Figure 1: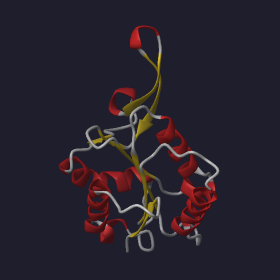
Figure 2 (figure 1 turned 135 degrees about the horizontal axis):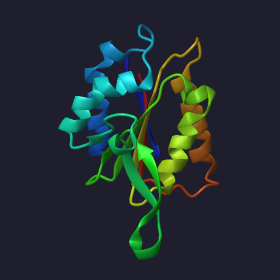
Figure 3 (figure 1 turned 90 degrees about the vertical axis):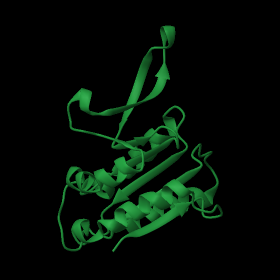
Figure 4 (figure 1 turned 180 degrees about the horizontal axis):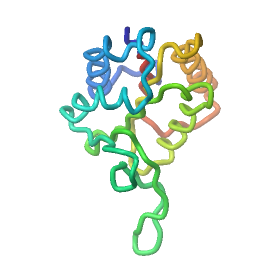
Length: 168
């Protein structure tokens, strides 16, 4: 079963986020964390073709040239000084997808993904996909509670137009 939540909650979900949800829903039986114990790279490889078919560039591997580098800082002559890596990137929609598994909540990887997307140049949308269940912990629910708190407190200026959380 795929769960999802979209932020801010007072904005209608955008079309690309709806497409991303559909991609995960099409593969729900294959990636369901209640029955499978896949690593994040395994889940990414299962949803990869759906992302590519929707115009995303998807990480090909762990080597530097196989990763997707999104600029953060520019230096002399406009050269990229700092970039963060993304699992998938849609340049036209300015959309990043991050797929996490075991360390998503226990190591707060989802917060690192959020911070990096907020710092990336010209990124408007982020999807973070995590397991619904990991070691008897409801990761998707825990992540949602963090973002409910963050968005409802209103204490931080969030540069993203939309944040999609997906539980698989």
